[in-house]
Length: 529
Ligand code: GLC
Ligand code: CA
Image 1 (tube, rainbow, N blue to C red):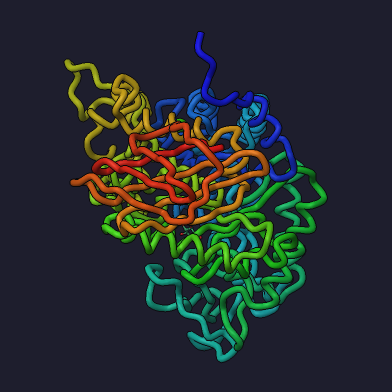
Image 2: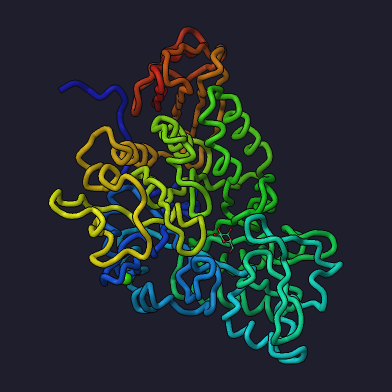
């Protein structure tokens, strides 16, 4: 038997080492779950926690290390759960607290972590805190929300977050005042200048940490405080986040990811790199990659990641995603071009950061067309697990998601984008995701290694090097679907010969230069040494 080109590490052991260490979140692959749309277990057409538990084996086999659950707390659902009416319970549509505990136990038994969406900027109008606050100008919670006689206040120069309406103030006939909301009118902002609100919301975090969750995705966290000086991540909000981090630090192995509001740098969410968020979503890559990757030039992508590294403090880790519940399905952002989608995912898995896979990404799930809550529902349709038997009317088939009537119509092209069909096709998006996720697994260089962009003389080729203390990987991404390209990276100074682990590009060295040959829509990941 021939010797392997390079002695291979025991990747499973490496993965176990990296994922159990204090920086596990840098090496983990997160999977964002809309519980309502993943798996229904009782035929009411609504995905639920027992359904999610039944899919943990699937997620583990896919290579998922951690779950982010979109809000699972009781909610009137004016904003798909981002309008919480009870911070200490589970939405009955999704199950019970016992189901939640069972989910935590089942995930932990598989070495999988679970983080919760923590929506602290606002509650639902139905939350008892708001119901009490609105009763009168003087009651124990009168000052828990932000009230005003006029639809505006000089000390609150904040408009609504775009797409949530035209005014941030709504008249409440019960109290006879306006209340402030950055999001929908059904989501009144809490008044963080009130120390009782600070104590109560930190207590919510403590409640779930005590229950065993592995951390939080902090919703719209920059919006907590507002003052005449501004509305987003003002110093008081920064101080609150630091208290939250201190609380988190009291529980070993927990992590939190912050959701910025605008498109500025994520750097302010990291503080020193040790005292605020461990991760923050890279909105510029997440929202704008379609623009970068539907183009022909690799330069904007290279520039983006170089700028992120420049701006972020040491220890910061961006969270990389290519779609989410708030934006278009990745398939749409890629204009339906499969190779664009694959480039985006390859970059997501191999550039510095932690990948957050949105449920259905692995199938290139197509958008839906029905609106139940709001137009973001287009990206929130149920998973497609099973093929429809040819004899069955497609409309009545639950695609393995439900035995009943789904809460929302399935997205387009369910015949070709269900798991069963994609599992049988070695060229499917699913097959590609399997290989990508396993490529990242147990390779420290991708989670925490350094980045060196290797400029080539061909603008359509993105070339970069990721290195940990003892391993080096080269990633090649071609931006042209039609023609072969050859790129020369002078002075690349690669450590040595290349072993291709993924893709179809070729990599060679001449002296200190590297030469890459990239087929149409080509890509490659190489281990070099
Ligand atoms: C975040 C969520 C979004 C929600 C909003 C208000 O941006 O991602 O879905 O509508 O916050 O909570
Ligand atoms: Ca159900």
